[in-house]
Length: 101
Image 1: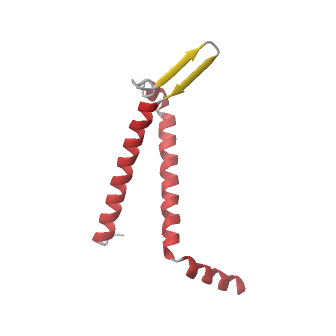
Image 2: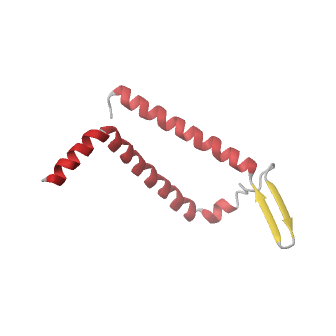
Image 3: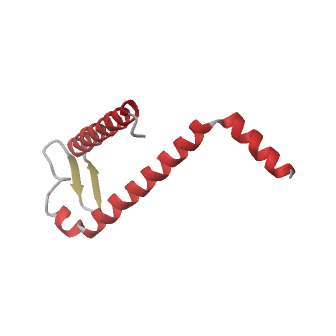
């Protein structure tokens, strides 16, 4: 009985927002895992896109040493991920305002 009381008190202190954040994190991790699996399946075709050989990507290739710093690729990935997050936030906000959540 003591454990149940402690759990109830902990739930009261943390609040319901904590559980919503945990569920959101679980969904995010599942989505990232799915993206990695899909990227792994399509890797032979993704390599042919030359995504990491864009103008602006720094490559220093010397005998016994290769340094690669994909500045342009990182900027493109950052813009795409930022837009995905903005769209997700807008959809979530519209669901909360519309009473669908």
